[in-house]
Length: 399
Image 1 (cartoon, rainbow, N blue to C red):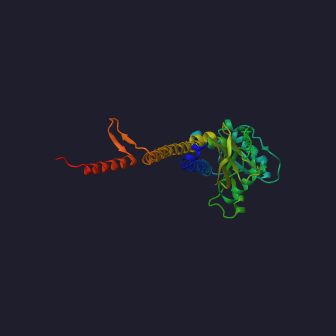
Image 2: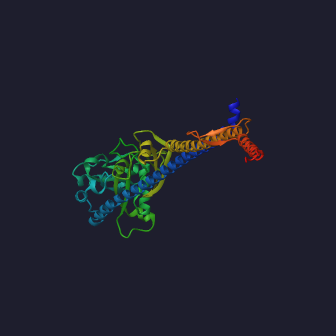
Image 3: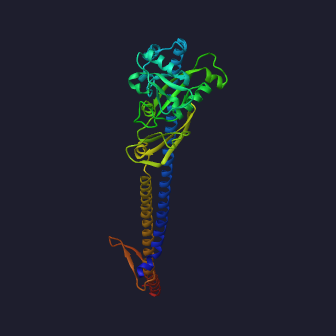
């Protein structure tokens, strides 16, 4: 207890700075960990946003490629004449294009004919004669407005089930037809299920480009519709479009949404191998042929690992280790200083004891030579020296 009281001040002067530094080091480590977490979140979000914009731009750019094929087909129809265009012309155009190389994602190019209800028997007769085989009409449901029948679609091998289909017998296709005809521009349908790809529900589209009989095209929508010959068109599948885009990343969950669709959910979802982190996501909207689409990306752990971000826990432990090392160094020097002060105090106490002792004290070195003495001895030496001198003065000189 006595030792504790005697050394309490020294222990306090040693432990208090160490404790304060430990608290400061812990706070700093936690702060740096949180900063690293925030930095990682920002980096992940920036990467996701960049990916989303890149993918949206790539999809929009890829979709514009298909209209070049449609323009070429429309030019062939107009060059041959709308009343003279026939199956040989369609085959010739189809064989002049490399579908997989020029238009990846397209199932082919074809022509949709506008046919009034009263002209259906005549059209079917002419179409059968054109192909040299019976041409059958197919409909989703009967209706009383004009028919828009797929007359040609090449290559035929992948699209035979679509030949003869009245696309106006289905509501979403019919709406796109009327919009394209009235505005004289290429229009994309809502997400639909292609008859030639029934296993890919709501992942297909028709890109329609109107063909008018006369040029220039009439200005009024009603006159345009009356002058409409039909459409150059191409059926598309979103998964085949995305597979041809290099911006796509398998470490990110991808969702593509038609914001104006009646589906109410993404028409295409590509999941990731490991769990998607739904709190880390990015959305980008873009317009494509009169449709408003949205690309949604959700990060996975694989995507985060690829960014090479520093683990916040490692920052915490590294900072904590550095602080602990600094504390140890400071404590070492402080302890050495305290030991020096204690030694100096101890020497001062011993010196005071020796100096005030009631006995003569002599200090000597290792060789036995006197190196110091206390006050009492010094006073004794002075007294004896004075007595000796007095004695010498009283002693008579010899004669």
